[in-house]
Image (cartoon, rainbow, N blue to C red; front, side, top):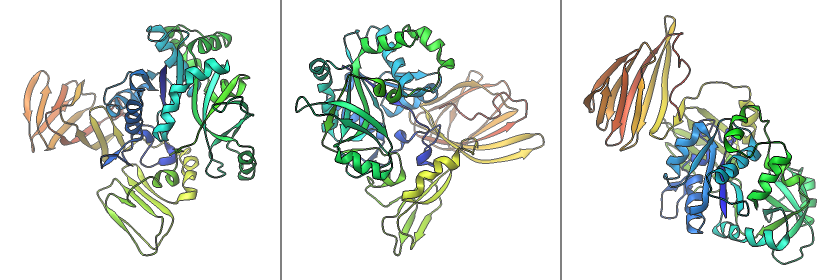
Length: 442
């Protein structure tokens, strides 16, 4: 069996920590087994390995987040990139065609498609090993995973199962996506399950489905056609149209940590970062990435979040409204993570007809900001901490605390970090500069 993990989503519901450059799966907030914290993606990788699924895993993400996905998966898994975001069905098809074209999967092999930001216990992942046998025993085209609802929620999709022919799986009667609370109560009385977004099928089934849609099954042709694809979800394109689907029930823990309310419920501490909670402020959480303290006094049931992207103060139950608010906001990102580290925009000021950006760069040990030409009027690096070396037009110079390096348009430059490094970059841009709006690729 092959597991295709989809790394998608805009991350707006967990703004200002997540966004289009840093998705929620990269946030290192969850308690780790040995102490400290881990990301959703790191947790999933650990569980895949623990449950014997690691060797079969393939990650599919947007091309802009390939390097970051490799970093957070420890460079231990193959990662492929979508040229455009076109929904879960298209991403799953891309992963299936990659496995097929490279010879890693045969038509009779079982594929499992799952979100990369799952939050579940190990028993959930062990169910993956039942997919191949369940497909064979049920003669179904599709196997889904569903979990028992803990409450009537309007945030999840529901699977309505029929009477099971075995104690292991049940036929799928229908799906309902995010019903109102009253309908959710009715669905629970009908023994409906929450839809976990996990689907298993044979590679042959996916190839046949693509051919029926008139889509190419050649990987290169499929990739070339990406710009013209509409956004398609796997639920609507495959699951809801299938007349031969069964569901395996999961009786343990499963959560969608897609909101501040559900995420903070998993945190070990009420205050992460600088600041404090005082007075009658029960069930309040602070998550602060800024170097300035954030204090909450006498306000219960809220989340207070600070990052270079902005500050959010919201009641936990109402915090999801930020997604609609951000739809009308098109500001350039002020923070981003990359394969080599991270960057933060500290200041921007106009200078004549141009712009001066001040950016803090943080490089990981034994990583490098790759060689590039200077596309601006000028750029300066001041080394704040750590040490490494700078290569400027082929000449190598030691980079130590306090050193300053200046580049002008056309200069080729690179910095290599031997230890963790921090530096300040001052970039002078004119209107005609090619990357006037771009910071660093993630």
